Image: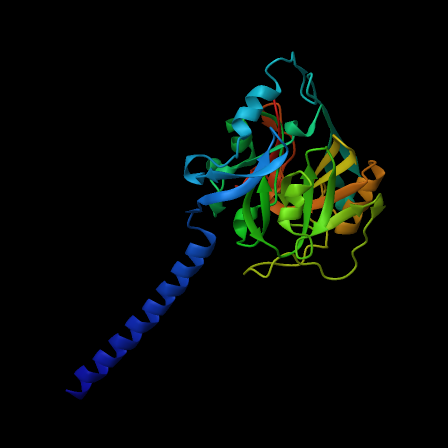
Length: 331
């Protein structure tokens, strides 16, 4: 009897341990793996007809690019575009991409610079993976780009990895949970970084914001490179780490209104590219003429797509990692 009772206790203890492990694993999967599509109802957006703020109902299960598809069709419909592997020109946009390499041996850095001029800010668009807004919803940058008729695209801020930050895309507010230093693009073609905790989203909307990104930090402000020497972190999520060391990177910058520069740095591939530090990345944008610039999601996410192909070497393996969103120029 004592032996049977002891076996029952052991069984019960094992069951409890397995149940706890299962609960923890499910919680982690729910937070980082299981897709959650969110529905955004009555979120303020820009009404282009009268430049006022109006209400729009957006069901992300039916499509999350906030009008990007219609804008994509209109943007290049009347233009005769000319393109090759590294250049594109239409009535609405001019794009020139350069592959650059500096250093040698273990200090080699390889990066890609896209100089982009658009007729107006309506050609700078964003799109969600699977056309759905939420967490853990991912697709390759190239797939999202192709689904939205993009001629050019980079990965965005991977908003879907977190549940905070300000997310405005193509004029619609999807999330308003201030958390960090953000970056805003406006309908007059300008861009700038801002503090999500001190500048309200409603004020940004009133100023004509079209897109916001919540990753960071800022790289260039008022033409001055920002130097980072201490530990820099973006999130407090599980697995988050400091990002100031040499890493693959993606960044966006403004040279002048409607004149932008996008940079993707490859990394973690000795002899080909070690990546860049934040300070090196900041200085690069200044050297390229940027007056404002911002650090987007990097590491294995860093991807540049142009004219039907990925031009860089994601993850040092030529293998894309799924992301939640892209920034793109339509054909």
